[in-house]
Length: 95
Image 1 (cartoon, rainbow, N blue to C red):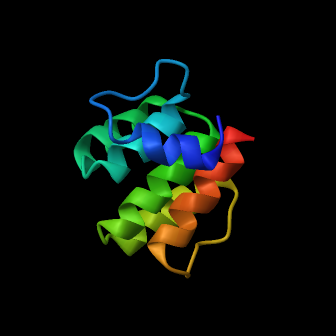
Image 2 (image 1 turned 120 degrees about the vertical axis):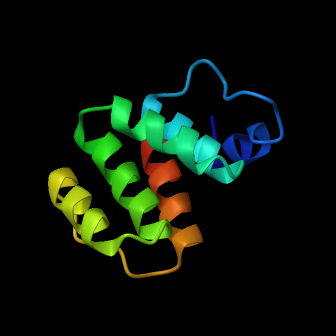
């Protein structure tokens, strides 16, 4: 799936079944479902889940919590626009 196809899929009622938990989290976030997105990110114990978890807390904004999750993901905290971070994460996980 391309990033464009992923963005288009957000118009549906549920995320495509083939998406990983981090991508499901980004999908729900794009739909405005922060809490559902947070549940998906929490359900993935790996670094990808932690990266999305960090993004979501940055968006909240709860920057102290976001820094914790960036650290868990092994990433430098993002500082650019949230949309740019969302797109970069989606592209990375779709690759």
